[in-house]
Image (tube, rainbow, N blue to C red; front, top):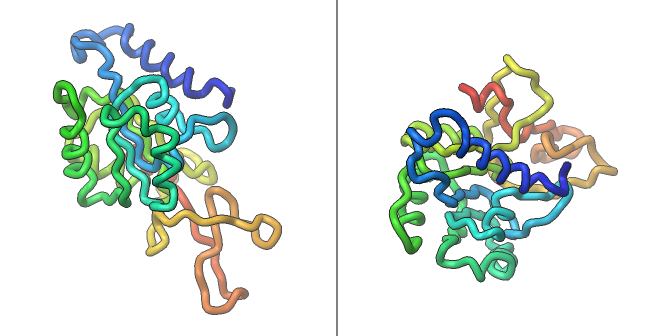
Length: 211
């Protein structure tokens, strides 16, 4: 149910908290700290554009959000500014080579006790492109959240590994669905002539995340 998807995320965290072995691994319980890579305008809304991590922030969770689109900065502040500095805002593109260090710095700027890399409750990744690259950068650096939340390309079934590449990774696009066959998971690549335009895939397959 899209109207209660953020509640489902909370329920899932609660189920984990009461599950076998959780107390031994996380004696302090839930940290109530979340990370959002690709926060958009920071809004918690229903429907296709729902962002469960923004909803957690609005429910009192702390953490860090990254948003590369500088035009959304005022919207993020309007929607989540009251939760600063518990929620830290980073208005820059998240990149695989630097995401771990940048996240570490941003978390350290929050008030309160240090939260270790395996104590983050949820890391959400949805930056319209290098999602699995960012997840790879974080996992290789030892980040082990209780939950990962990522957008995958549903065009590819389990067993098929797809890693999008190209200069357009991470660049949001607005699609005119009446003029081309682009969707949320494919879009026309740039070309000198319209009839030479090719479809570029957006988002990794599920298998790529599992690798």
